[in-house]
Length: 322
Image 1 (cartoon, one colour):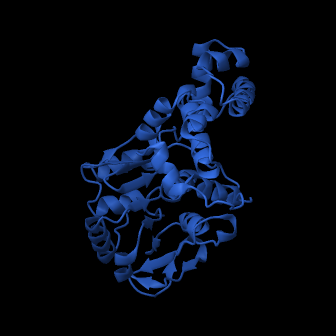
Image 2 (tube, one colour):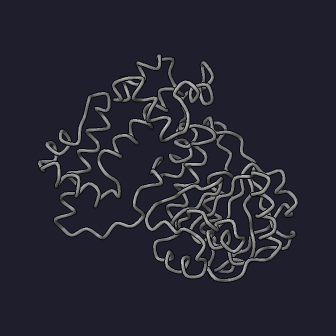
Image 3 (cartoon, one colour):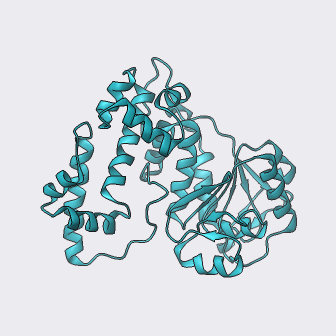
């Protein structure tokens, strides 16, 4: 893993990247990642607040990277070093996945890597990105997205979401969940979830409490054929009102949330158990293997059987501890 460093990168994003890929959690079943801090040379890279980052690899090492992660910036319009931009272009030409956190999208845009592609950044920076990089298709509201092997994410916490998603996509749901537990953060937020939710009013607070109770109930009863109408009844709302309040509170629709939770449950069952795929589908609430297979193809670009083959934990391995 390569953390690409140059003057002006945000210390928070550096910390997120380091926390996800730079901590040894092999005792909890997480792969043994190797995180390298890559810069133009070994000179310490200054960051805001008197902090510095000491690189341990030069730009030529990017040829060995499996993933390059670009932190956000303090000054989003500051020009990145030309050698950094050239290195990013060469890496993309080689087929190396590149991920940018928050304002790191501006660095990728300077390199021309986002021209004609979809990208996201912090909700308060979308206009700035559109204005200064008009060839980029700026997505107005998402947590993270991918286009042609390039990932971009919204601000701050969404950078954590993207990093965990990248771990999940390459090493499985259990590895991502173990890292999330260690960081005491949510293990799974979909990229399509809204990144900005208005501050609730006191009435909305009461609705949010009711909706939290409904979500907890749904997670305990995923194997049952729950519908949005069922969940609305538990919340004491009409389906239409329930859907509106649910989306306002969580940033996603009830149906999309249910599918996401069922996918996460199925992933864990495929990794942890020897249950046959139809039984996994039943326990995760999909009802049939065909339905589950369709959702795996649509959301994970794989099949349940291929997912199990890729991420099945070895027999006799112990569950990951928090």
